[in-house]
Image (cartoon, rainbow, N blue to C red; front, side, top):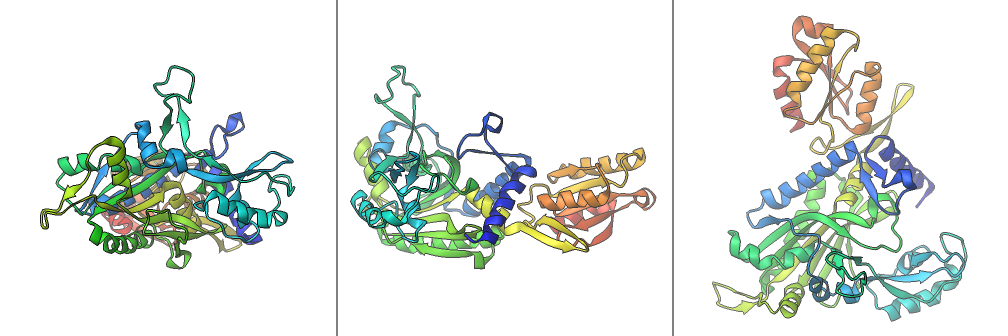
Length: 463
């Protein structure tokens, strides 16, 4: 990461805290590594991203339905999925400072590409060949232990009263898709769907990451937006290609990301059951990194759950009368990663006269606050009363903010920083002529709008 991009990342991290988007969790107790809280504007942005995803993936699709499965599930599910035996990252410990570090990240720091999906022997060989070039990012030493695999599942004592977690361990889910697989048959039997169809879900997942880094990009508690599409074996790759195009368009059309900041990354090291895997990557200040994974998973998932549960999850094609296990194509995106990409895309510093303004140029559908309402002066009761009346009408339709603190210019700058598309100012002319000043965030142009036409005006602009 170059100095300029490093500075941009530092600015964004600082900005997110200062303006109430993201806070370090448990900060008054010294923080808690790789866990974050979303502040007043962050939670609005987060909800808007999730709303756009749900509309695009469920509301607009006749062949996809929604689900909200439990965070805690039967432990055998994680055995069937392979997580208990194989959900791990390669770990090495610095012998000097005893920091535990991800081996693929250490190799990446010296320009060597390694995939966490590699077998332990293969990544150990690559690490041994490059050990002399690698320095510990904490203390600078070059003395490491051998590579070990570290399981990422987070254990819990839910329902365990023995105080021995090695007996009947229960896990916080490491991904949301397993809840979809084990409910596949319930959905098929209860909803008006048939193969091919998809199940979409937004929910929390937990991973005991060795090295969580890059702000909210990689955390130990996170939220996923996932869709699993169940299809016949012969149609799997056709459905996969269609899903790839559909998801690419989401980031451009719904989240407003620039196509030049997006690219495809094909996985060379596939898990044994996968037919193909691609990531959509975004050009963050720290470089292109995964925004979403798209995978053609074959019949592995339902086959494993059939085997471990004893429940036959095959289906009979009504046209051909052929019986088989459905194949799955998957879309998996992170809420926080999408949010970080949207903030990076929107963050702008502009010269305005002698000053520099910071403005978040969100798409209107994502802006945390849609409209801010100001009385020109806070010490004039008649202006405050009229502004309050307009604010109370508008907040029924939009997420709004009322602000009477400081001069109007400073209020505009505050709203620019949080990405509010329109500011409405009530002045003395408003009392005489029944109109208000509406100011556009991006152009900073102002126009007078009749109060009785204001709601329609804002609906047209915001939509």
